[in-house]
Amino acid sequence: MSAPQALIEFFQQEAIEYLDRLEQLLAASENACPDATAFLTHARALRGSATMTRLEALPDLAATVERVASGLRDNELRWDQRLHFAVHGALVELRDLVGRAHEWTEVEQRRSRTQSVALAAVAAGYLSAQPLSTAQSTPVVPISRFFPDDGLPGILERNPNPPFTLPQRFRSDIASGAAVIARELVAVFPADKTAGSATSTDALRRSLLSISAVAESYGATSIGALAVTMARAPLESSSERAAVQALAHLMQDLDRTDQELAARIKDATLSWPGRRTPSSAHTPSTAAAAPASIPGRAPQAETTRVATPAPPRLVIRDLPVPRAIPVPSNAEAVGVVSITSLLYSGSGALARAREVRDALRVSWGEQGGVAIDPKATALLDELSDLLDLASAS
Image (cartoon, rainbow, N blue to C red; front, side, top):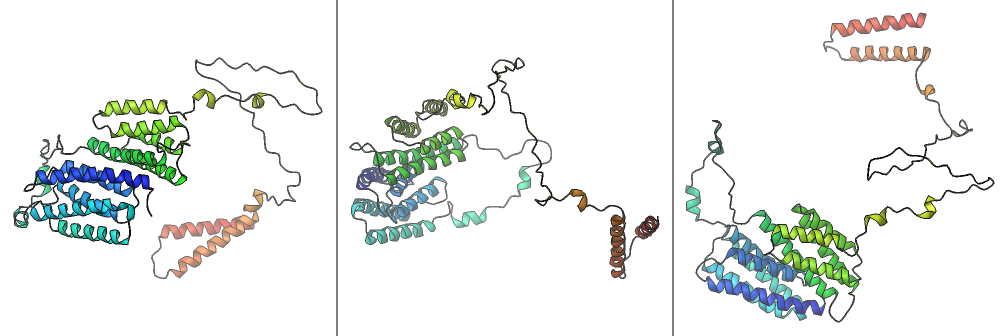
């Protein structure tokens, strides 16, 4: 499955730019580990761009490069010359495959898979951030030592300045999703057309729902609700498309503070073209408010009901008086069973009680040598006598 030619051309320009930045980071630190945070940012953007092309096996290679960058940032991989050559070779192969995106065949798919497996195999040998001998010589300290029972504060504390905070991760994730939305907008509504195809529109809606899920996972319900509203809109008017484009550009602006982002999201929600006003949602129709006339009767004068004065901004509406459900006259014909016929009473109750007594005696007799509480036996005998007296009276 392939993407439209316009999207392929846009992807090639974008991917070449990301590859140039990745190779610059490698060249600047040939004998040392590159800037892991910047390397991961560009690798993640490259993977997202490759995913939107729908070219089989190409996103896998870009995802492998992203996993290597993530391992470097989290200190899970050791960097040396061999890993440097492996990553550089993968970037060279990626550049060549990006240039052949227009004529993507099974040959390019095999090349992408082979390079992805080779890079993953090389990176698998660098899963330890320290030499093996040093890791084995590290003493094991019980966790109880760090939590004494003397009432004093514990030794372990949360790092006040973590290398990558949760808000930064949130902004990075929604910026990546917003970049996908911007690319889908270019594919759906190019400059020479006023509307896109159904498939392209579905892809744009999926991108909006995807960023809504990401925002909801971080607790940003306002962004998630706005993205869902946009995904469900017709997206036929230019004002709606401009609002989606403005949202994508807003979430890609990492220089804007969280407070500014929240304020702009609130303004975008209030100014959304498809937003319904509260007054129009609760206006009763004239036909529903008019009383229905009953044929065969003279019209009666309207009676005005005076409601109890209510506090400001509180409206009391008259509710219909509940009516009892009529019982059909042919209740016996439709199979209605009286509840009294299902209950024991009189001699029937006594007969049922004797059956229960006899069953208990048989059950206790089958238990053999199991010891039975004498009090329970005495109570059963007393119950049996009472039943016999009731039956005789």
